Length: 203
Image (cartoon, rainbow, N blue to C red; front, side):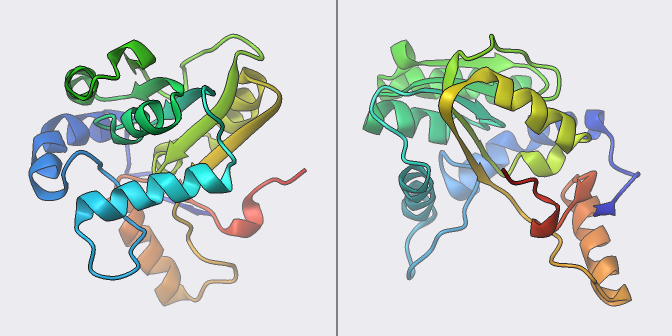
């Protein structure tokens, strides 16, 4: 686990409040992009990422979903539109919350989505109330990842699913240059820590 003590939560919140409209102008509705098969546009490959993660997690029509780190609501809106899911998005940014709410109204999915301006590490949902916990590129910003995942599992009904898209530091052991590179990434992208796949609890 690589830790970066220079990252603070208020800096993360400020970053997304300031950068939301810039990200929109560059990338479109989605804030995360990582699934290319060729030279697709950002809007196409972002939808491909959502669709593939939904397939991998076996998300079903009408599932109740929490989208942790929902950004401007791209994935939440797609899940509501394509799979008729009932989605609650959570974002630390008041700007993103307002933008996601407006975007969902424009997309015709406002009856199936709700967006909350809350800290993912303090938000609460009733036990066994959700079918899916979804998060793409947000868990890197969490300060106590283990505590969050433990809490998150209590929200899910028996047989519920977790769909996570996340960055990792790389498998240990890392050389000194590799550790420095990961630290610089953490500092630049406001990640208090990055772990390896081996640190993910299973079972």
